[in-house]
Amino acid sequence: MRYCENPFLFQRRLTREVVVGEPGRGGVIIGGKHPVVKQSMLTCDTMDTAECVKQTLELVEVGCEIVRITAPTVKDAANLEHIVRELHARGCRVPIVADIHFKPEAALEAAKWVEKVRINPGNYADSKKFAVKEYTDDAYADELRRIKEKFAPLVRVCKELGRAMRIGTNHGSLSDRIMNRYGDSPLGMVESALEFARIARGMDYHNFVFSMKSSNPKVMIECYRLLVARLEQEGPDWNYPIHLGVTEAGEGEDGRIKSAIGIGSLLCDGLGDTIRVSLTEDSPREIAVCEDLLAQVPVLANQVGRGVLTAPDAVDGTRRAEDSAPYPALPLSYDPFEFERRETPETDLSETVRCGGEQTVRVVVTRATFDKVAPKILPKADVKPEAVYEDLNVLELDPTRDLRIEQINCDSQLVTVQDGVALPPITAFRLLAARLKRLGRRNPILLKDCLNFGPVPLTPEVALLRAAVNLGALLADGIGDAILVRGESGAGLSLRLAFNVLQAAGCRSFKTDYVACPSCGRTLFNLQTVTARIKARTVHLKGVKIAIMGCIVNGPGEMADADFGYVGGAPNKINLYVGKKPVKFNIPESEAVDRLVDLIKEHGKWVEPVSEEAVAV
Image (tube, rainbow, N blue to C red; front, side):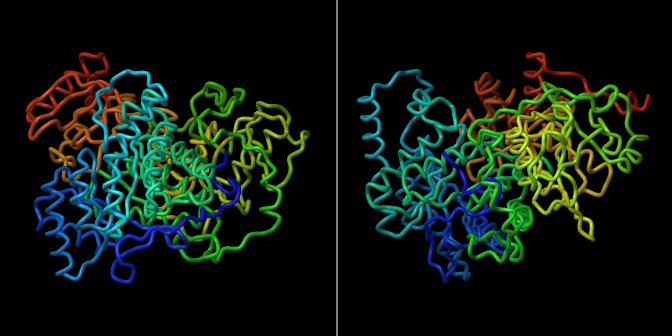
């Protein structure tokens, strides 16, 4: 199976077009040769028409091209009529998407008024009971017939009214049927979506896109790669567009880094036709990150010119023939569909630090950075340089040329890509790993976030996104034993960024990790306020992962790798989870953060924060 045209050479996947609304009158076309479409979601109550209109206009003003609104009930779905009417009266015809999970009747109502309907196969026709059951082929076929009875009416309405659809699976909300046959896996997510797509295609309806969202960037990347590979296996007319997103990415730098790793790495492989960056912040801020990310991808993918990602023959980029011809023959050093860290021997970075093998991925800094940050670092600090680049015994190689066995003394020799190579870092390091594999070498690799430097330093926002995409994509491939961040010119910022990328990529944990949803009309508390309150109490808990969810619509599986969950259960009531198991119910919101701390203590994960005075001593 293959998931892109060529992992060593950017070429955007060419898809069929999906029409959302009326092009020329505010509508958009997703896929084909059109630029990637930016979208976001409202955070207010769907029954508050005035606030929905206000938030929609604010999103459109900053460049949002599709706006999603939750419709949890038929009543909410019916109010979409008034929202859309008021938007049209104000001259705004941005396409509106109704977000549907549990109620097919709400989807049927919403389809009357909006240009697109998003359904989640895990929730749309199934009530999740976590039942363990072995399905015979006949029993499974009966389940598929039952699903068709519930889903076909929506397909019929969308086809008649010219509506678009997103078939969007979530890592946390797979049905019992899928879980029992495929497990909580990327394959299960893909097959769940394909079941619904086959029903739509059987009714000659094709105006839909797919999505495969997860809060874990590595899982998300694997799911989308597998989806595209499976679509290609199904046939050339299965070339449906893809919506990209890392769900519940969180806020601030962490949310941006997680999103950049998942979305950016796939865009650099030519996958993705519309994107949403899910941040626990005001929605307009998501669009700014979308634009910054899309502006970088042509640069990261070695394309020139337009600043937006378009189909292959719509890009003004040029490539040298010698850059592209040899690469398809090289073996990939990684399995695109299942993460496994590249096997290497250990080697010394310094007298006290080793990398490679079973060691964690290390952080290397330049001499200039070390000289600035070293005097300020306390002996027991978690964020500190682990080696200085200029002091390393590192072999710099040009991966555009064949490697010779005599160039590399032994397998434990640390290697990297030499500066100035005219390739994007993702391509260059994939090539290096592939050439080492063909040569039979397993050398540890030092990754760099950039290989070339412009005359003007990058802004912190751009430096963060480039480092996250370049390093995160390679780490998600299992490539890399140490990393070096140089695109961020601030010494302390570059050091912190390196550790944040490693944490977001799941390579090491040096601080508390948060999974936080971005809020919507279903949310049962103020996510930004509560997230800040929880962080204030727990930010010192290194290695603990906490999920903060406005409701459980995306499923407890979305918190599967979190240690604890804080979840809206009802208005002003909170449920607390350990992993994906609810253990405390209907706690008053005023007490919930304290009870969360108590729960962390009960499970032996709590440590007392160190006071500033103690740190100073």
